[in-house]
Image (tube, rainbow, N blue to C red; front, top):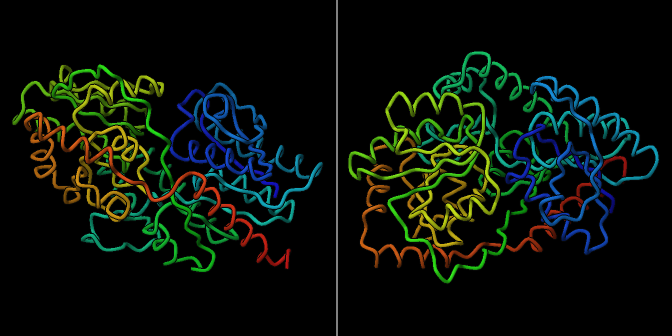
Length: 406
């Protein structure tokens, strides 16, 4: 099989988040099976920093703002993809995630080359679990509700409108794809509320092997860690509000926030407004080595994200012995709920989460060590080899059932 993939990430940003890491792992396994994967991608290439098995195809982006980058990407990736397809044959065009820019380029290329197109759906950004009382939400987009949620998340009106337009286009494009793979059963059920169930396939995420533990680990202070985008749905502002509540119970506690996003400036303002500069560090993007050092210093991992399909950062934290505090949303409950070191709090209940967090900061060392052991014993459901095989089988089935291939 020969795959032509769309792997968009903005110029100058941390390009190796969950979807990029997943793609690199999959292509590494696929290459061993003789699958050739070509990826349309801006520089820097993910495969320069992560083990991978794909061939990067450069799509030049201007050193400009995001809007110009996005426009240049869609035009440049489409043009290069069609050119590549005219020179050699491919079996499928593959969007590595369901953001609008990958969807637009993938669909345009597939239509021009008369090829099936598939996208990986990591999550639906417009799904809000707060109004579902723990039940499975509908996957349909309610634009008015989504815009209201974005306002509550702290986005400006222009940012919210841009997100709303993007979500509307994503929702419009998804039904035109020939097939979908997803990383958790919960997201699959959401898709099945507005897409044909027989076109949705599950291929779980996996976790890389944990790094070797140091023989002299850094003493754990009253510290917590968050790693992820500072965007809507990820709970960036809630992290700051929560930490103010934690400090009332555990003065001197420290929170490290790793990541970038549209809410970074607003987060900085909130930290200053609440006089939390000595308690919260906004560190931006860091290299994997630096993130691992922070894990070794922290007592637990904290995530207030409402927008997860799997939660790779949570899994990585557990694997190195960090207990986790997160919201009790269906995807995280399915994947991590059975782990005794995962504390899933009622979604939106900052008081409950603050109480759990403060307890983890002050619990006796022997109890923390026991929790850390339970965290490190978390057993993932599949290996990257299993995930790659499931994804490849789904692609083959979708390609085989596509009308043009029957």
